[in-house]
Image 1 (tube, rainbow, N blue to C red):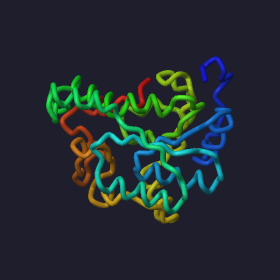
Image 2: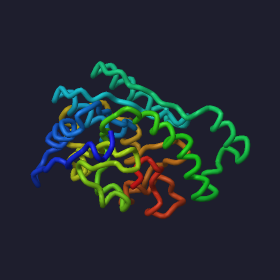
Image 3: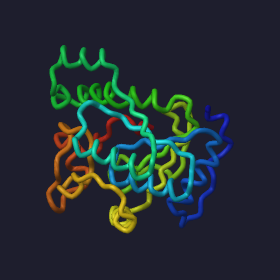
Image 4: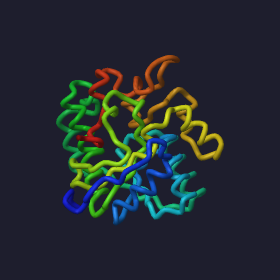
Length: 235
């Protein structure tokens, strides 16, 4: 899909629910749509909504080679409960080997450039393969998560990924709203969330946050807030 094939982003009411956004986004995409699942509480909430709505939205995940054990546990729980097939994408082996051979196992902590390189190999390049042939993709991004996400829209054209639609159904939801839904619906949740991890990524780049800290404080904690993205959500 190219940007020329989308005449306009569908109009949404000011009080649009995540379900409204999902329905409108899938209709506007006019083609295959998949959810990029990191197995955060946001993503499992969206999987539950998709199941309730009966939408044909598949699920894919990026296995960076450095995920937490608890993340794989959630993946298995989701597969069993919703009878879904999660499509896994992995970094190219030769690129990972080259990085480790030339720069070591923790080069990503030495500079922002090195961290972006690691994220590109382990996440961004696999994402490109995962999005190939899609008309749209769904994310669990929320506006309050980070200063880097304030300019997002519920449905937007993703110029960085070939002009396909990017659907962010939980964009305006608060953390409280997400957890209220998850607890009411009793969806499978990553055990790390209850251990002080509001945001979960690769194991070496994620740690618990202290009470009162920003939810993204545990991601790449050695960097400034405006840098805390891995490249998956480029503008």
